[in-house]
Image (tube, rainbow, N blue to C red; front, side, top):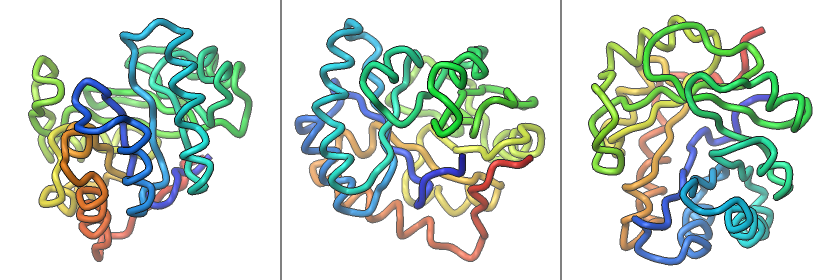
Length: 212
């Protein structure tokens, strides 16, 4: 499955959010984002599903893709469009649970081939980030480029990326950009998303197709 267009992924974190998550999501989607993933793993399963069901109508109103950072079983229970898995998880199992039309991603923290059952890889952290201070060391642009070269799947860059860093990430080969804290903490999340999308409109081509 190709990445959503535009390939800007907003990952939620209610603990950082300056507004309720449904308001942040609505502002981001109104500004042009069309892909979000619920990442609230500290919540019990039932509460994750309930929150997903609350956010899903917001996503549907804008024709956006809504996925879950978590298990494929929870994503299926909430009727979401796919799942994002941690490094080392079994994307083939997720595909079996969610079906061929689901969007399935995996995280990677070092260069290497991606799980062939996944549609994309999140490379993280590209830069040091206040959202996840314990993650690292940062890949940097050279590390991102190495991941792009070896993954065999579209690579989405995550970690400390503001609008100023977006063009360099795309030039390094990233097929998309993922953001969390910068949008979650923003007083005006719509303006933050608009700035990111403007930075993505650059001469470097963005391939969103999954290699065969």
